[in-house]
Image: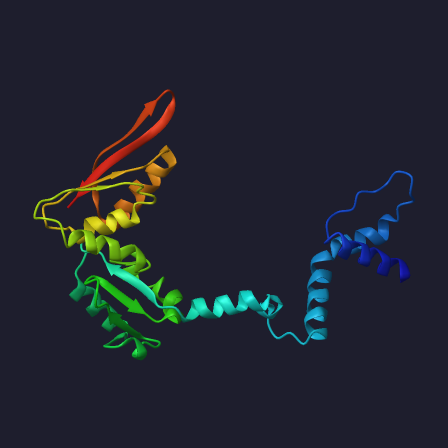
Length: 242
């Protein structure tokens, strides 16, 4: 019995990893193997005992107070999403939300559970309560990219830019990243006769990711290519429009 306790304490000390046996010490294989074969159950039982002794109701309670506070703040933040004009319209998105029992409200204070708010600054932007994020990620208009979940901070600059563009003006977009925001810009400019030239892709992997994201958004691209200088990828550009 005492040997089992010693072996168990040893396992806890090395976090249930296999033991390296010293050649100059006698090895008790039988007891060690018993603990090894039941290490998952032992680990779970010890975790339960620890939670009981500390009077902890959930695993989240083990997290530092600062982390739990940040999680609580994050859950209270609004979720924003923009309407993808390359695939749908604001009216159709609102209708789809109503079909899912969402109700439009007029003020942020009214946002709770199955409600949404049309933004005052960005005409294609909609807000939802933070606790609805997981539900939103599963509804078809989001999975099919008719409605794209993205923070409002990524949209404000795009709408400010479009407000000063002339008809048929084109846009150069640098540091394209994943191309989600560039795709949003193309959505805003949909049916305006403008094109977006996006630069800043520095690898084939990134180019593939950008192409996939644009395809999901329904934005058609033309002129995809990579350019190399001195065996290094110097960047590439692709243009896309409606």
